[in-house]
Length: 70
Image 1 (cartoon, one colour):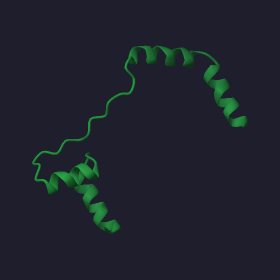
Image 2 (image 1 turned 135 degrees about the vertical axis):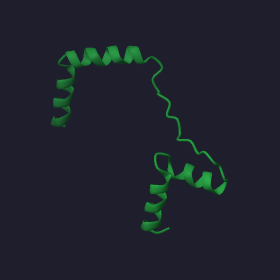
Image 3 (image 1 turned 180 degrees about the vertical axis):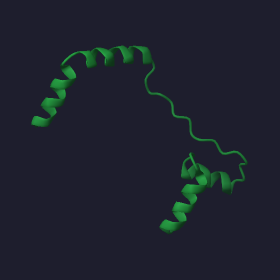
């Protein structure tokens, strides 16, 4: 497949994955659907609380600084 052909297919696929689009054309699926992405986090509220605490502390800044030192 040429780069031009791939670009054409990506343009036709829109917001669905290229593989899903190609399968829908091959198997005559009239209405292909974008893949649903599932959140790996089961408790989003708890994650939000932890991230808020991390952002309010200097821990995040210290970790970022230590990461640049290595």
